[in-house]
Image (cartoon, rainbow, N blue to C red; front, side, top):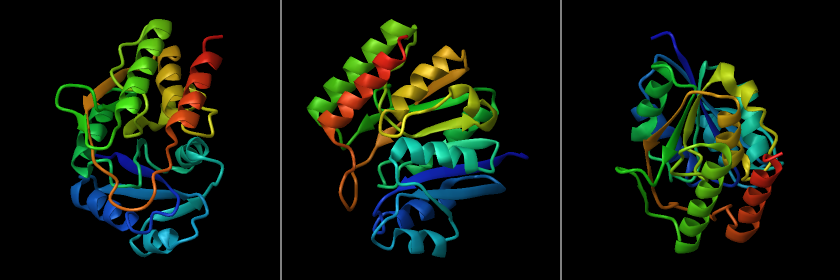
Length: 223
């Protein structure tokens, strides 16, 4: 294969996790040409030094997860891009299925915790309810058939990134991707994914405030 794969990972104070994430990628990802691109939000711990020591390319963006992903997508060298979290919640063994989905012709591949074969070890009842509410809302408004909405383990064909017209700076980025992929008539597939528990450090997601931002993202895209 001549594909070049870029794995984009937003980070903020993940020194106890990022090393294991990078090792997991290198152990599992089958590609001759690949890069690990860490987009760091100006961590106050040793996240950056650990990532660099393990061969990751590091750039900086401290405006939020969405802004970090957008900058990472622009900077990625690969023709296939994978977005991955830094907290060990994403299973590296699923990387090759994400990549292969793009290789066989899909524009966007989205991991889903709510398909048969997927699941989560780290989602509360209120977050399940919120996710299902947002899924129903987006499916009704935009004619999609998604099973998951607020999950960041995904892959993309680099050449369709501009068609997604991404603008969100925060956690609304995942919902924006779902909506704009439909608007752009991209070829989309969901695959089962298992979300693991965060191993160390503090979760960045704030259930109610970030849920409000996701709702705003949906409402903005209706018009």
